Length: 497
Ligand code: FDA
Image (tube, rainbow, N blue to C red; front, side, top):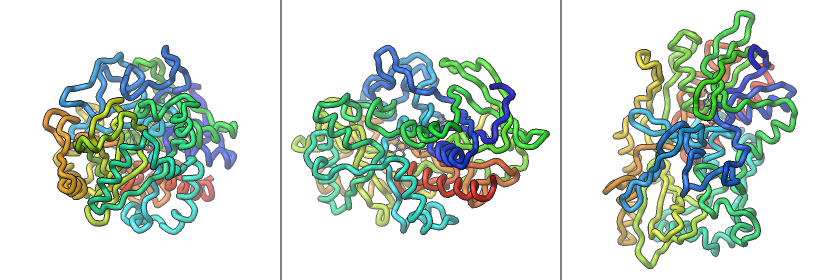
């Protein structure tokens, strides 16, 4: 409540925040979590908590009156539609050169993401987080993260035959015919559940076009893993529809946090303050960076160092589709959870996941989200006249990523005698170069913070989310965000409390 005092306040309920809450609670510390999004525990008028990807409604987008679907077009036609403004689950946050997609609600990105749970190859770890001991990460913290997230592997024999992964097998065939390694990747979607979906014995989710706007079944979001365990300790409380706007040192020690309570229109219905001995910034790369940049520039936390807001990257995300021959259908039934990737990182700087196009009809298209080794990094700055934080990313910087993705798809197209699809992102537009799903950085480890996420300049303030990672993880990021948070919180509990 207003005026309360808590030992620890965690801003955000995504991966970093959930790790912090669970481990602190297990160490006997009471934790209060503040989440700007909704709780996502109550069904809508259709009896379901989350809508399908093919039928976006008010639940789908954060405070928008029109959908902004990552694939904006089909056969060249725009597919966005008007929706009521609502505190929906997916935020398509626009900066001048890029739209950053993020999850909003208890569970953060785990509510909306594809569930691909990929541990980077150890040989690449030094390029991701050079100041972190890789040996410890691969013997202790990656295994801990994978176990607690409930990561599982698809049964290869089932994968080889099920109709819902025909698109993935076509992706593998084309990769291998061009001599690219194709790897099956682990997931937090429960593949035993998916088998039962295909057998018709349980309600369908991944096989019924659920993703992006939430999964009603099957996906082990943080609500079912870290946060369920955290709540079970009895030491963790969570306030949904509460947004942190300020953190300032309190006169008696600790920090005063200002929090706005929102209604589902996004209007502020109350402003509250609480004090806390320690504050963990876990609002995601963008959320944490925006808060810290504003608080430093406006004099709330002037002692933060000059690294705040720097080192931001988008994991080199770029999307494209290929048009297949008529004898290579990808299937009208496509499980929304991707299972495989084409690994050309060392030779071409790209790791491409073979993604679904769950339209419900045969499209003869293969669709890919590439993660690339782009060197481009952007910076968040405070725009005083507009009263907001800007990001200086430029769309043209994606050309480096496109060139890297082309090392895979130009070769496949030439081998298969196929072409790129030009109808998915506009009219005659091949590359989805306007967006990212993987924001990383802005309060980089060992620069804006010490080597464990303690913010320079203020004791008791920590960063514990994707903002710590300088722009790239070589693969999908949430396992690395979780493992790094596990490493950092263990040290913080041992030495700071
Ligand atoms: P995360 O974004 O998860 O959590 C931050 C939370 O803080 C949010 O709930 C937010 O609402 C809240 N918040 C922000 N500001 C606040 C404020 N001021 N006050 C209160 N609360 C605030 N990764 C992967 O590894 N495999 C995959 O398959 C995918 N697929 C994928 C698909 C899509 C569509 C998206 C959008 C993302 C993915 N990702 C992914 C990325 C992955 O989901 C992402 O990297 C993590 O969720 C980031 O974890 P964090 O803990 O950094 O923040």
